[in-house]
Length: 195
Image 1 (cartoon, rainbow, N blue to C red):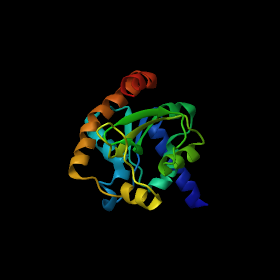
Image 2 (tube, one colour; image 1 turned 90 degrees about the vertical axis):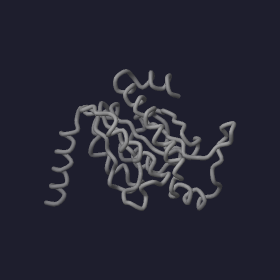
Image 3 (spheres, rainbow, N blue to C red; image 1 turned 120 degrees about the vertical axis):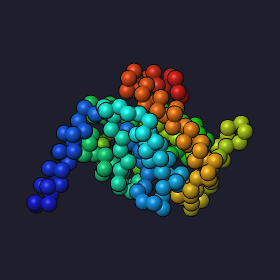
């Protein structure tokens, strides 16, 4: 009972500190062994953005939970509809070519377990996402993603090649512009400019 009360108190304090802040969440897995994996693309980008965007109103968060439990880390920070409007989640998308991004709003998880966990915990799909492509593509832009559950898992948890990681790092400039446009103008403006 005391532990439960203390946990609630910590959540409450955290919420009060973060209330009225814009939240940018980078999905991934904690731990060194996952650091440069494709499934950690959200984390990689948010860590770069935190250094690039020195805006005191934006809080950059990389949850300490594993990907499939991302919702547990986010739920204490998002309590109202207003909080939902100020939430942006950045994550890897196997259906997009490496280096491409897509901004979406109020959509299903598309099979992404981290996003599914957040939707379930928040009981809402009404928040912004920046999906970041991680798959190789043909010169015409056709995605060549792995087939079968095991191959997909191996691909997601596989490390980026040096050149691929450079592509993601270069992409951080564009993602920073997207985040700034979302919060200084609107999600619609960001979508029309960057989708």
